[in-house]
Amino acid sequence: MQFTTYRVGSNPLDPVYELPQVETRAITPPRYIRDQMDVTDIHGAFPKRAWHVDARTKETNKIDDIEGTKAHQRHSPRKNSAGYTSYDYTDVTKAHFHTKRVANPMNPSYTIRDEDGKLF
Image (cartoon, rainbow, N blue to C red; front, side):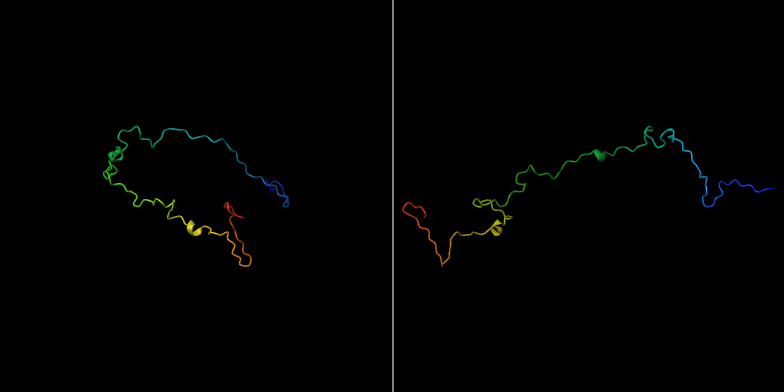
């Protein structure tokens, strides 16, 4: 008896392997028989609607229609305030007054008015 092998290729430096192959088939959706969890057709399968969900209550502490119950402004603004507010800090942060007067004692300059009141 002689030894026989079914191996393909006998070169160990360049082996040949027969890789497994798979056949793919189209996916078939499952058949719809019925919904096992649906109980809408059974009378009494759901609890009754709670009455307090739809009940509306009246506001008992509403007093807007009574005279004198609304808040009013405690202090009215002053008439001569020129729009002053307590949040306005321009009197502190604005640029200060700069005079046009020249006060150089070594080179004084004077402005004089004539008879018509014009400066020269």
